Length: 146
Image (cartoon, rainbow, N blue to C red; front, side, top):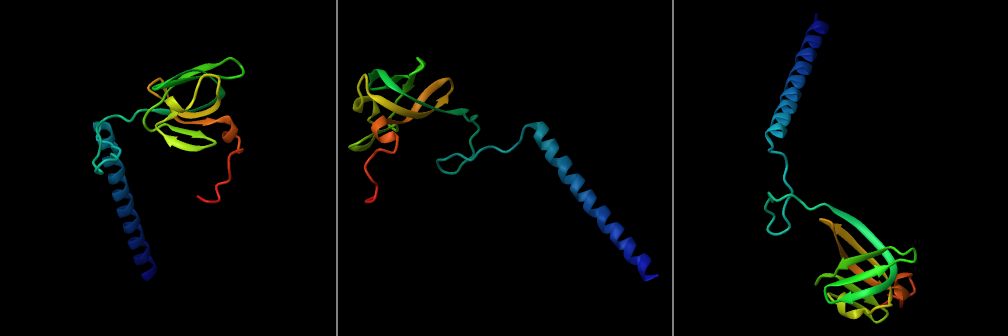
């Protein structure tokens, strides 16, 4: 007789677990259908943001600068591909003399050979770093003092 009682308890516990799991899945699905899914946490203040996050695609290019302005640089690769990158106050300019945040548009000149790393944000290429090719190929000064 004790064996039969244990199996009934096990069956009842398993049924209760399945019932709770089914309820949780059904509730999550209902929330998803209503549109109350998770929202990303904003960076400032930790509040949730209702604005959609911009899709960012990483991009990089090595080439010669064919145009330079305080707000953009245009690089042309060896294969002829050219792209204009927006430079912002957060774009890092890296040269043999060091790096300067926000100085990419004024640090480099036409015909400088550079490596550019950035993102394409809403169809616009934004440079996060522009590095003189003499230091971007690991030819820069040692960083022992950093």
